[in-house]
Length: 181
Image (cartoon, rainbow, N blue to C red):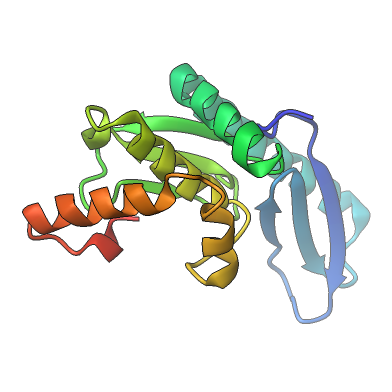
């Protein structure tokens, strides 16, 4: 099974009595969860579902087209070595517009599993870049920075060393390291 979500989307439709007219939807990995108002006719639901699926596929295709192959290879190696191939993401790429953070990972919606890494760290040691990538990959599995999150991140053997590096850089730049990741 590939690390990147490349397979077909699985659509789950549920009827929700709390909804009146609007349809609500979310994406988690390869699952599209769609809630429709109870009693909405199938003929009305089908074209909307088709539109949602097409939208998710277009968004993911755009993200894949912008993905960085070197970062992708790095993420696949980290996934195999430290996470047993358990982690799934949609795309990973360098971005130039990220100034306050080193990386980010989208969860939910059509960009679910898109990882962005700030190009500001390109010249940093590879083990620090690997840590930032691993950190963002774990966010595809665990939101926030609780104990479950840190337990997974700590599988990366140089996590403590990389965190120390980040604290030193943050100190040198008079920045709050907690806001970076």
